[in-house]
Image 1 (cartoon, rainbow, N blue to C red):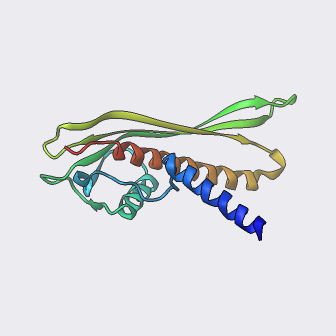
Image 2: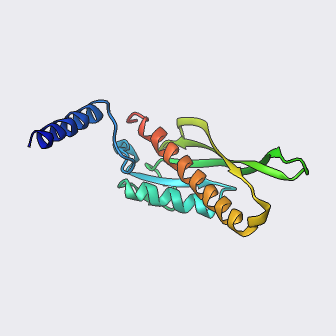
Image 3: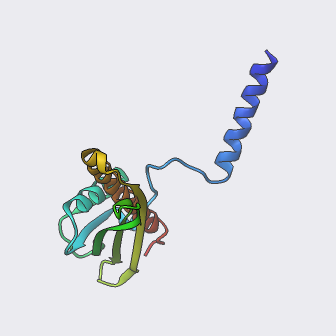
Length: 167
């Protein structure tokens, strides 16, 4: 009986500590009211990025419109790049490790084309062990890592939008 009470007390204390420090699970981001409608513009970025951005914005209650009309801010994607760099080689000169990185540059233009959020860069990377005996499995793993990098960059972008004050 006392073990149950003390375990409950510990859980309650842990919950209070975690909630008191501002910790919250990933998911919904409280975006400013002025960003409840947004257009995504720019050139030279992937459909995967557009889909992921639209999905994330919609899940946060933002209406994504096709073009930036008067009164609607525009998230402009300036640049997007995936890179893969060999990091270590074995004695035979074959690659053992790669660094995969994903970078994204963007800005947020306001309703009258003023810059609300100046051009910013996000760069995320992962180390990837390569095994020549499992080429197909490693190719699938690399594809999954690239998707995770994109997701992490979009999460960081949303976090930066969240920090924007009302305009």
